[in-house]
Length: 125
Image 1: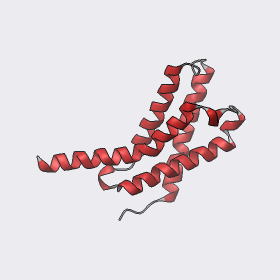
Image 2 (image 1 turned 180 degrees about the vertical axis):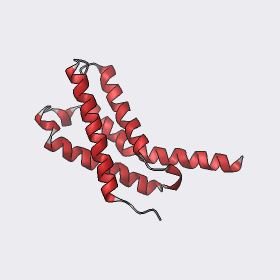
Image 3 (image 1 turned 90 degrees about the vertical axis):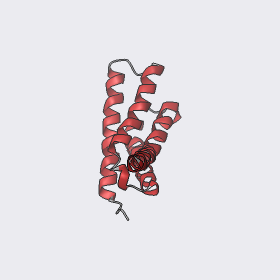
Image 4 (image 1 turned 120 degrees about the vertical axis):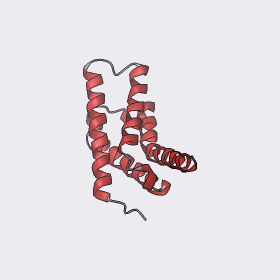
């Protein structure tokens, strides 16, 4: 059974949040934030970033992977409540915000499922 490292999980959650905060801030400062394309890019970036931060999928159970996603969402929402809301009052009313967090939540599980699929394919060949 894999041990759930809370310090590591919270650290990765905070790091994902910092990277996404900086990315969104950059788009806002370049006046590129208001387009639908930029919002889709933000959502995809959040999912890809979470996917890349997921530990080795071959040894990760789906329930543990889901725990990573839930933890990262909790860390991000708390940081948004404390920091981001000061800059964007309507943050929690934006569709891209919730879609990005949905991908952050599901990315570790998807990573684990892909890892299991590729592991089973490589053992059968």
